[in-house]
Amino acid sequence: MKRIIPCAAAIVLIAFSITRVGLSFGWNGSSVTAPAAARVMMEGEELVYEVSWYFVKLGTIRTKILKANSNSNTMIRYSAMAYVDSYEGLPFADLHSVSYTGVDKFLSSRATRTLEKKGDEWWALNYAYDLPNKRLIIETTWQKDLNSAPYKSTGVDTLMLQDTTFQDGFSIAYFARSQIGTEQAIRVPTVMYENLGTTTFWFTNQKSTKTIDALERPIRVVELEGTLDVKGIFGLIGDFKGWFSDDSAAVPIKAEMNVILGVVDLELIEWDRDGWNPPIAAE
Image (cartoon, rainbow, N blue to C red; front, side, top):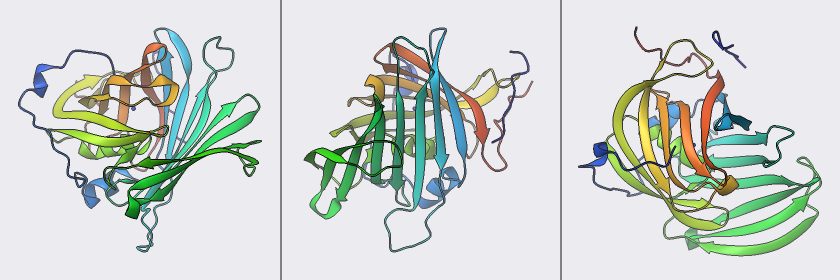
């Protein structure tokens, strides 16, 4: 992985900005085109973010896009992993999780699995997709470690869907990247932790610059605002704001979001995407 050493050293609670005025809502299940999905989902892309709460460093989030599936007989075209790890020694946060998402060529969720460490074991949330019947079969299991098979199932439930086009709590980030640069408001059906809700995005194509510790000069970014009405990892819910690179990759650079502790910040600290570096603002 390429590591940029600092030379000098998926989002916040805010009122709706005036840039939202004039945007009408739309969602027909086909907001993502295949070329837009391919532009975002570059095989091997690996991004690392540091999460902080005020001046306290909480941990890291690492995402990786896996090898694309060229088999036209399967619904899953792209897949990715996310690893969330809090730093050791924090008195109020001890979080370790691994998430998998598989999406089709339009970035709609088609496979989901999440594992969280609880004590010395791992609790898993497994989704079986029954799209012809518009439902998800959800099973919770326990396993000794990340590589062992489940030794106990603790429940099976059914979640009925309104449609077969939706996002899970991880794939929603890639959906957002595919829409950066547009001007529209979209409400997206979203499944998180056995519940169906909605993520609302305001894509305004509003451009600015942001600084990160990993670079001396500011980065050109495109802003995004939104709100989530279903609870995600570590109590994630409510209004959020993010800044994505102002280029075709639309890599998330910074974000602010509301969790159990309050507002936390995410900042890109490492990246490895073939041929990509953050777009530096002109002096």
